[in-house]
Each structure stands twice: as C-alpha cells, then as structure tokens.
Image (cartoon, rainbow, N blue to C red; front, top):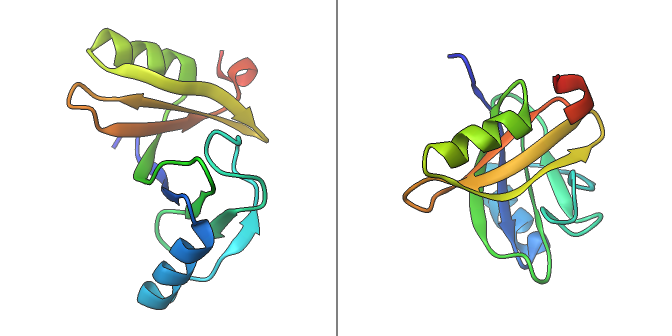
Length: 125
C-alpha cells in the first residue's frame, strides 16, 4: 500500500469521558499530552494510545465536535490537500505543523472527514 493509515483519532466534547469509555471497553491506557494543534484537541486533553497496531489518540474538549478520524501517510500534506480538492474534496484544515510532522483534514465528495499526515512543509519539498 503506497499510503498506509498511520494514526486514528476519536474526538469529542468530553475527552475524559471518552477515554474512560474506551479504556473500559478495550483496556486502552493513555499518555496525556497535546495534539499537533488546538484545532484537533484542547491542550493537555489528547490521550495517546500506545501499543501494537495503528497508533491513535482520544481528545477534544469544549467546542470540539465529535468525530472518528483516520490519517493516511503522505509525502507532502499541502500537495495531498490540493489533489483532494482537485478530485472533488474540500479542505477543512491545514496543513498544520506540530513537532516533526504536519497534518491536514479534508472531506471527500460524500462529506466524510479524512486526515493526512506527513513531514513538515519545509521538509516535504
């Protein structure tokens, strides 16, 4: 697979409650921290889910709409967002840089929210 799924998120207005729910349901434990940008989650409210499988996190906070999202790895987030738009999608966020990577969001022609992640813009070129 040229561009694999590299991360998942579960976002809602009460991230503590969501972490408790999924922790009880699946036995997940969390490492609390910050998401790549406050557009994704309130500071300190992003619970990274370590372990085997696709990495992920649960976060959000007041004002964050509930959603489940996966991220696809790409070599250039801006280029992927432009391509998504050219194919009928709509950019909703990004690229936003955080640490050693960038992320973006777009909706597909059916309105499904998809995330993409890759190196920071200056490293993608």
